[in-house]
Length: 557
Image 1 (tube, rainbow, N blue to C red):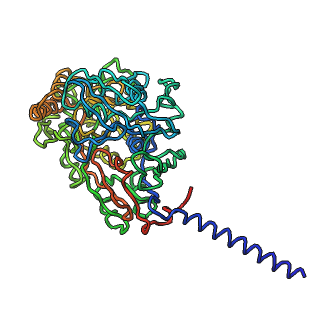
Image 2: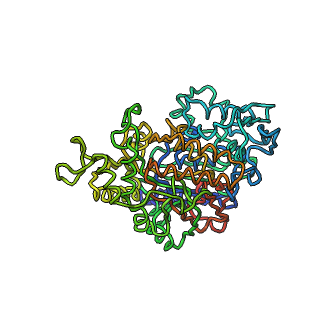
C-alpha cells in the first residue's frame, strides 16, 4: 500500500515537473515572428544618466538615440550645410520664414510614452533647458547662434537665429533631443544631473525604457505604437563590462551581439575569426589626445605651473613621435590627426601644419626656459622643482593605458618625469571636469560639423563644460567664428585650416590618434547600417528574420 502510494506520488511529481518544464520551454520559445529578437551591446562604461542635456557620455548618447527624438536628423551623407539631406523625425515638415526664421511643424501623431502629445511647448522648453546655466549642458555652446525658440501654435515651433550662416538648420536640430516639459518642468534644473528621470526616462522614440540594473545593464523594449513604424528588433540591452577586452570577448564568445568599436587590430582579427560575426568598417568619429591643463589643479584662477607656459607644451609635443606610436599600436586602424578632429569631419587634411617630431629642438626649448638637469638625476629641474607631472588615464581603456606608458618613455628621453594615474572612468571624469589634474588622455567624438565640436571643447564657450584644459586664444576664436559664418565652402575650408594650424602651434594638447571604426555584429541581424557620426542612429531599422532567431531572441520578459 505504502509502496503504491509512493509510486503514485512520484508519478504525480513527474507529471508536474514535466508540465513545468514544458511551460518553461514554451515561455522561452515565446516570440517567433517578425519583430522579435534581442540585441545585446557589449558596452564598456556605465553612463551617469540618460537625461540628454546633462551628459555627453557616448553610451548614454547611443541609448538616447532610441528614447528621445530630434526634430530632424542628418542622413547617411552626414552633410551639415542647408537642409536637403536631413530626415524628418518629430518635425513632419519645415520652412524658412525669412533669412533668420525657421519654422517646424510637429508630426501630430508623435506621442510621449505616457500618452501625452508632443507639442511645440516641449520644443521651447527643451531649448531653454539646454541653454540654462543651472543645467550646465555640455551642448550649450553649440546653440549660441540661436536667439530664441517660441510657439506659434501647439504644433508649430519657431526658431529665430542671431545671424545667417550655412549650418543654421543643422544647429537647430542636431544638438537637442526634445524633452517632455510636463514631466521635467517641476524638477529643479540644478538637480537634473541626478534627477530620478535620468534613470527612469519617458521618451517619444522607437523604444521604451524597461529597467536599469546598476553596474549590470540597461534594457529597452520596442514601442509597438511608435508613430514612424514599429522597430525591427524587440529588445535592446546594453550590458556593462569592465574593459574593452572583456566586451570584445563577450561578442566573440556569442554572449553578446554587437561591439560597435573594436579599436585595435588584434580585436579586429579575433572578431573576423568568429564564425557568427560580420565585420563592418565605417568612418571614425573619435580622436584621442593628451590634454594639458592650463590652469592650476583645483584653482582655475591661477595658471598651471608647467602648462601655463606655451613653450613647455610645445616642447613636450615635439618630444612625441606620434606617427610611430600610431603605427606600432594601431597599424592601419589609426592616423595622426591634423588637429582636434576625427576623419568624420570634412576639413581633415594630412598636410595641415603641425609641430614636428624633434627631440633636439624640444630639449633646447626647455633649456632656454631654465629647465635643466642641475642635480644630475636625469630629470630637468628649475628653481629646485623637477619637471614632473601626472598623466590621468581611465583604467578601463587598455589602449589609453598603453599610450600613457609610451608617452612616459618618450618624455623621459628628454629629461621629463611623468607618473601615470590609472583610475576608474567616473573618477577621471570628475577630476577632469573639475580641473583637478595635470594631464589626461581623453577621447572626443566629433559631430559631422567642425564648428560645433571645436566650439564645445576648444573655445571660451566650453569653459565649465568640455574645455577641461581651459585653452583660450582670442585669435583662434576669431578665426573659428569666421569659419562658421563663411558663406562658401572653399572660404570656410581655408579658414578652418588656418584655425587648426593656430591651435596646433599653441599645443593645448598632443593630438595622438584618430581611429577608423570597425564594428562586429552577429550575422543573424539584417539591414545593419552604421552612420559614421552615430552607429546607433538607425538601430530601429535593423531586424532579425524569424528563421534566424536564437534562444535569447525568443525569451519573454
